[in-house]
Length: 481
Image (cartoon, rainbow, N blue to C red; front, side):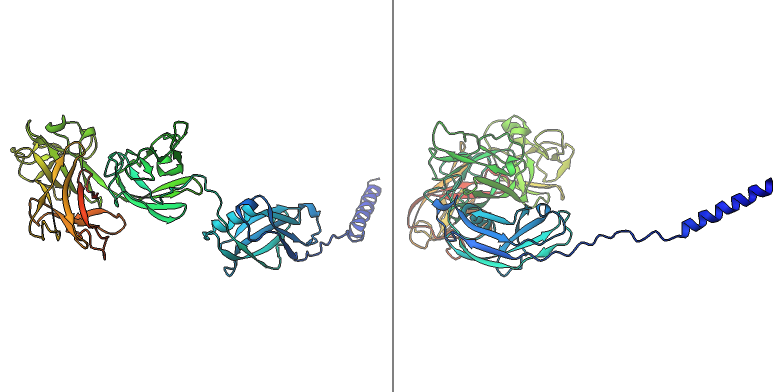
């Protein structure tokens, strides 16, 4: 019986093996044909549009079916647009799914060209092509390239630009404070084109400002709607305020830290940007003369943020004439005193020391170096000297100090081509001239003569009131009226 079972098992195994080795026929295969590059054509409607044509169709693109194996409604098309000759290196793209045509309004196409930085009312050659693919971006096929001619046009700016084509900066963040008129050219923008203004300015940290189209006029100004918007100090929307119904009534919030900043104003889009160029280091000067309050104390500035500070502080009569330096606008940070008990050794002591002291009231030029641990104080009065008739580069015209505006003023009469400078204590040891460079209208020690047309600008002939601003930490400017 056992023998019969073995034979039956062996027979079953042979049959199973035979079945496993038999040919059952080839599986059906699916072959997807390659697509064909789309052929692009265009219909030009309005290629030299006017403002009234903004919402009209200016250009219609159409392209052939690339004949992919899948449903044509899922095919992906990328419209590529760039200035001729750039080989689409800076292209603008638009994605279309399923459809094989696209219409541009004049406003849309104009915006693309202006986005390239092109000028208004100028004709440009523009290259256009199509790249097709499956929905998953496989089998990308490129069309022929079409070249069209389009003339840009001016669209109404979102914010009306100044009719006088001038723009000025005013506010507690600026070197001139809220005094109006403002120091020009130190606080005057440069007009880039009809809708763009740009300038590099010193801004005090944590303060505010406004934009004025007319220097000396408060009735017209540009402001923001809500100064509490996060990040607005770096840029955002602004508007025009010339009526009680305007929603743009808030001052621009300035940056947190003092320094040089480039402000760009775009009236076309109604936006501004404020970008740091160079941050200043600050050293505050609290003392008996102002109630020992660092938060409200004047400060010295380090333009290179290198520990070398410079500034001017008015110390009125009365009191002890003592003060200290603090690294923050409070008593919690670094504090510097004098190494000697009389407070006048010129050697700084970190962490306290004795109070620094000057001998009496005066408008002091203070310096401090927290790396070398040195400091100095020199009482100053200021004057004007130059080629004008009352001076002849040998006689000083004294200036008067105004404690309310923290500025010095003097009056001179100039002839065509006259130049001048500022100097302290009727001596060339400390003199200020035009700094030049990006911060137009600012001053530097030993700088250029003001009125040297080859280096800054010419001073008009006539009688002028000259104002000198030394109250900003490490940044000094002037105004000619």
